[in-house]
Image (tube, rainbow, N blue to C red; front, side):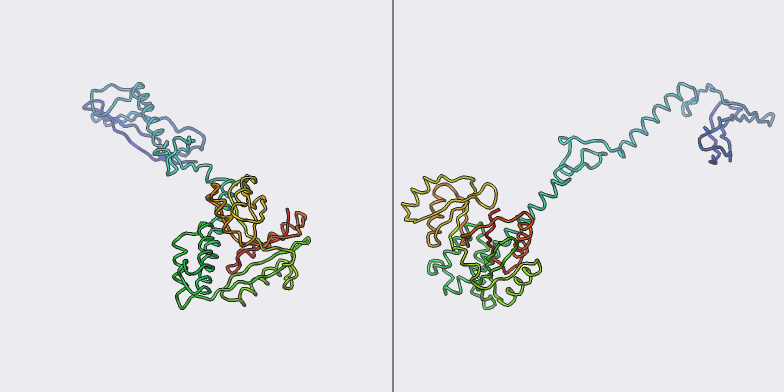
Length: 360
């Protein structure tokens, strides 16, 4: 039951009569029953009596207080409904068309935020994960070449690339891998500081699942820390650290030039390679979709890099890597386990790269 408060609305009728519309006071009624009809109380000052009866529309000439004529009541009801609709529109959720959505995610005043599909669902999660991996890979490359530059400056004895051939080669590789020039200059400057670490390269060998083997390239200023991290990472994932030389004999050291193209004109490349005195090369499909890799002897890496750039591959990248002579094909389960080991190793700061012999 609901209790309705009393309310009186004075209206003008005549100089001698005052009327009021009084609703039922303190009347309880069921929740679903409509409220009782209003009654009219007429106070007659001469007789000091009150007459109670149903309200009737009355005519008056007061311009301020409107008459309760049915026509006026209908007009007031329509106006009130329109005002209520206008006020509640600000709280309503209406579908927004992509062309009407502003950059802030709203479509005019009073419209709810409607996020673009670009920021929703599984596709957005995949894009975010891909971007995160790409950013991490770039940061890893920048850090690796920073350490290589420091090592080249210290081993060559000069921060000048013209007087230090090893430094010049490393800088060339860094630029080919899109390392910012500011990073290169900072690494060269840091190499001349007394606090710069003495970086050294080392190699670890390991066995995975399904006959797979791994070559782990490390570049660190703390050999003990790097060795402990690598061995712990492999052992925790049921891999096995191999003895020195038990894996490397199945690999060859090769120069590697990667280009962002699904195919390379082999005949055109052969002619240019002969002119550049490159003895041998091999073209294979890249690790990433839409890329190709050219393997050559380490001494011909820089020359092949220039040849490919001359063919229009401006985004070519060069490096040195271990290439297996006996590739193996693992089951999907073994492949996933091996990739888990490789991904964990590549996340270590001291690990430069990881090579393997899996063909799938």
